[in-house]
Amino acid sequence: MPTPGDDAAGTGIVRSALFVPGDSEKKLAKAMASGADALLLDLEDSVALSNKQRAREITTAFLKDAVTKSKRPRLFVRVNAFDTDLTADDLDAVMAANPDGIVLPKSESGQDVTRLDAQLRVHEAKQNIEDGSTGIIAIITETAIGTLQAGTYARASKRLESVAWGAEDLSADVGALRRRHDNGTYRDLFRFARIQTLLGAVAAKVEPLDTVYPDFRDDNGLRRECEDAMLDGFTGKMAIHPAQVPIINAVFTPSDEEIKRAQKIVDAFASAGNPGVLGIDGEMLDRPHLRKAEKLLARVGISSHQSG
Ligand code: COA
Ligand code: MG
Image (cartoon, rainbow, N blue to C red; front, top):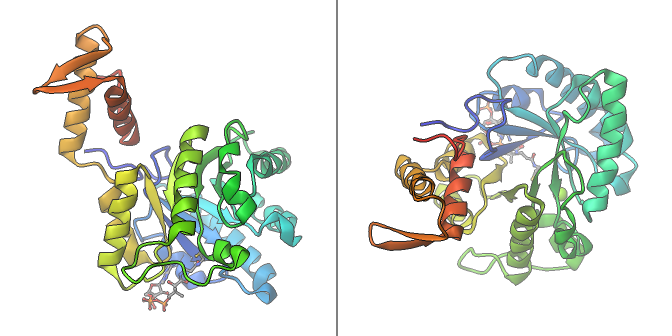
């Protein structure tokens, strides 16, 4: 079965995206072997202000070597947010190493992504990198305004691949004292942000990426949250620790059975002359079922036009 991310640096959908502090050579090296589909090399919240310049240097040196590896995860850099005055220096440093993409934190609307798009174009031209080859993942719910503007990402930039949500900065912005109920589920503010992200992603035709599960020793809690996200339509989840990667990959990889079933639906519609509705195994299937099956096949890299 095709596993997205195996042909890393390819175009498979990102199931797992592992944050790695950009000032830690040790963790950067370790992350390469984590099995994550993407690494999010962090210059933002996991790096102290006094260490920002050092983190840029370490991350850029690491990237220069890592991008040349044949089998590797996709490599993104999380820069500091536009309201910090650090973003330009971050991009100056890391764009010299041609990362696969940039993670934009505290994105407040599609306009922020359009703004980053324009800056990346300039860097690509300067570095002789193919125009448009640097992707963008935006974290869109870290402020109240960002959360409310989750619907503005359609047509913001062709570079936009995923939108993700974040809980920590949103709590700070809103002044929320607790994120979760006693049973571990998120309180309403965060469930709203999560659903805004899901709908914002679908509206913009990009992948919805679930936020991190901070308790990295709690495998069962992580698995539950992955399953919950997968059932709602998220296609991947961010991680903070290598031990979280195999769990995330497992949950977000469709099973052989699911793939077969989706292929069967696509084939049935094709061979029946593409009707509005048909029956398979005594179940009524209409156009939304077909769209869902096509989406699942696209996730595992099977074009719905090729027969299984
Ligand atoms: N990427 C790569 N390697 C990591 C890692 C990560 N995100 N997190 C931990 N490791 C490494 C550790 O360095 C350690 O390596 P070693 O066995 O060679 O000593 C090993 O994995 C086991 O780590 P462990 O001892 O369980 O955790 P820790 O106490 O060293 O680190 C954190 C805990 C939370 C500090 C660490 O996981 C981390 O830095 N996570 C990323 C934080 C981040 O980027 N946050 C921003 C986004 S929310
Ligand atoms: Mg943050």
